[in-house]
Length: 292
Image 1 (cartoon, rainbow, N blue to C red):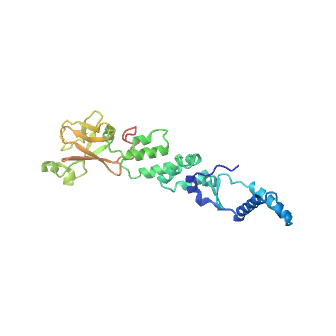
Image 2: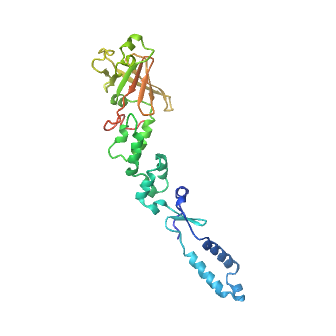
């Protein structure tokens, strides 16, 4: 019996690993099959004195019928295609896949169960995670959960990086650079090192109890009490966000945006906040569960 033929996706991946077979074999098989259909008993050969040739052709045809497609292979005209995983083995295939981009490796998960086992290995996806996290301001806490596979960590990181809804964990886990906008009163800007160019930007800190604080000696802060809230509203029955902002005391709402390096920005006509990079923070930052 012939082994199961390779799927279309397997053929696409493995086509370059095929090798040729002699065309004469297949052509001879077709010729002898045609002769057998026209003269099944070989009577014509006997009348012409060709009985020996008929018997030789019959034996040759029987030998050809015993040939089987190699394990993991597939006939295609004059070629036999073989699964690269069976040809090269697991270790070499991991080395080959490690040179592909993450999307191509993810597509190879769909080829077969054997390919899924290789393409989902932590050995392969550990390097993909490092490439993805390189240069990012924050690493999602959900991707750092104990016992999580590297493939899952990569997927969670990508999805969390697309998240534009800020949560309390995001506010509290990061320190925030703060400065006034150009539209703020000149008196405030004159106290702001961002505008004076006399030092680093001021910092603000959000706390789980809903309060906000600043560094000691902050001239703008002045020691006044400050609290914040996150407001999110949705379109009824659709699940899409209608409004999403942060409000501090009674100041104008802070609109939220996400940058390509996964950092956060919040701003209104007076203030501007930017989350400070902390990718080296152990255990990651942000919510523990994935929220889109």
